[in-house]
Amino acid sequence: MRVCLASTSPARLMLLRQAGIEPLTRAPQTDEDAIAAAAGAERGADLPPAELVLLLARAKAADVAHRLSSEEPDFDGLVIGGDSMFELNGRVYGKPYTPEEATRRWHEMRGATGILHSGHSVFHVRPGAEPREATAIAEASVTFADDITDGEIAAYVASGEPLHVAGAFTVDSLGGAFITRVEGDPSTVVGMSLSTIRRLAAELGVTWTDLWS
Image (cartoon, rainbow, N blue to C red; front, top):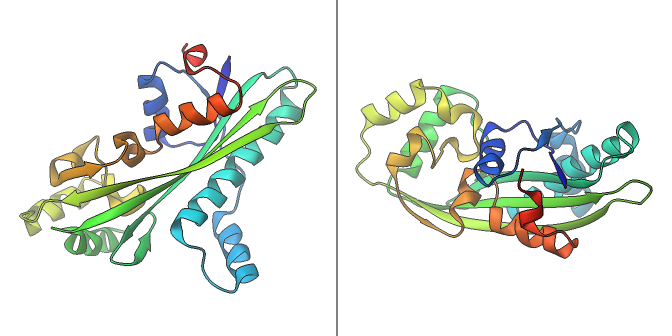
């Protein structure tokens, strides 16, 4: 059975490959800021992070699933979408983008524990049928070392790695040495929870091992 990853994230692609799955990749054509703003306006308040990551994951997966249905009518398989945000001290963080913001966050994260919220949406796309969806949220707590030096923070930020990842850190690359504890599915912190994706596939009638390449 085929798999399409509705993301251009190298970390999510690596996770699937390590799990024995070689997916197609498609970039979702979604405006995340506009989607979040519209949802907040409708509610009259910002969405909690768990709801927001699920909303964005669904939007990404739905966009790719429906485009695949029209562009590749013989596609039979799963479309996987995800979104992640990091919550620390009651504030929610996406990607920092700038060295200044990444540095500020690392000074705040040093010795602290935060929650990584990850939304998951899986669509089963089949020829001649409406796509079916299953969704879930996964969370993992992340604790950072309390003895990280200012020099280490500066060097990590200078590497460029934390600028384009949710929360400004990775657990599976350069940032891993600064993390002392992860509670929850570790793959959630990398980009998406593999155990959650397996469960959602099962809800759609798909056996995980049938997805192995």
